[in-house]
Length: 242
Image (tube, rainbow, N blue to C red; front, side, top):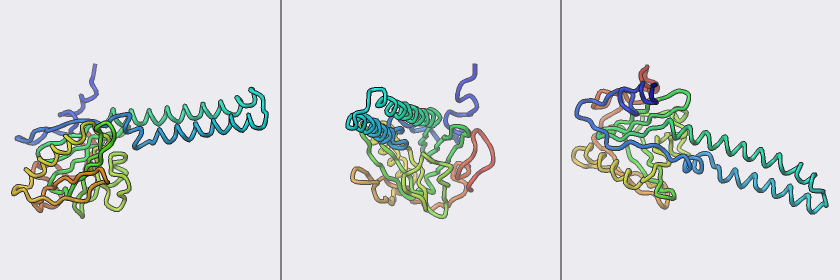
């Protein structure tokens, strides 16, 4: 019986890491937090609850019978349950098919429900990073990419920082224990910068926190480990967005 990661030479990665490079952390989004933050299931639930309440209230005010009220409210309630089920299913599929990896030299996002992609982000092209804290110890860790390198938003969504359209920022979305993971990433970026020179960027919000960036001035292209920078189908294939 084949397993979910049998096609990968190393779990969550399109190929084995170069010699001497080790994985510092691997994780995935929380299904519930992804459902709330990306697919907005709570807002959808409130919307449909309001529609059902309006249907019932209107029927009572106008003196409609119980059968008439039920005929108006039940279809709306069923539509709401179906919509919430679909959104929760999308959140579950995204969480199940995603693996975020932080190594000593890079961040790799293995994402995609129908078509699996591996987004390789070497520290040499990271301009800065930010932490956006969420309830329950969860959070988003976003990476700003040094121009002219650009990862297309359609390749990443929903694994990208919201409202960053001109220069999309890859993000570890809705991860548990986000503060610890952000600290681990910060330490790795400092080590990768050689002399420890860092370039922090603006925090994601009032609860955000700056993280340092590698500042060795290397450009885009192949990183120090020989991996191409950008998006590639997993487990292998041509580079997209070189």
